[in-house]
Image (cartoon, rainbow, N blue to C red; front, side, top):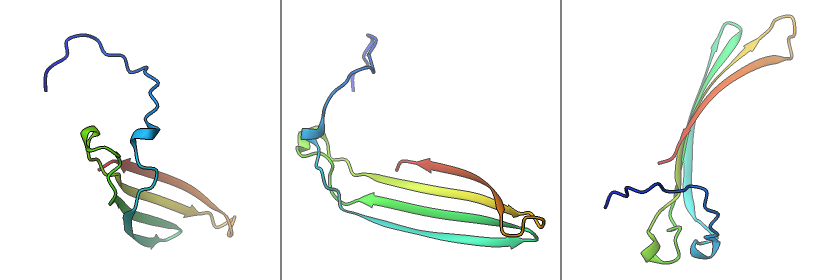
Length: 97
């Protein structure tokens, strides 16, 4: 691939809806784990998806598939004075395959 020495603008507003398929069939799966520690819970959830359909209508534009991997790590602390209420803090990371 040649190196482009001129500045490239990323401000383009290009409509590519006619170049891509409107329906994508795929597979989704995942697993989770919860562990109770005294008055808090820790959750770990891992999910993934992969599109079986090629996104582009014309192979000259490429042959990409949609996909993602989602990893969630969360903790919930239960305050004894509130009994039926939980304060939650969640940290998530999502990356594209």
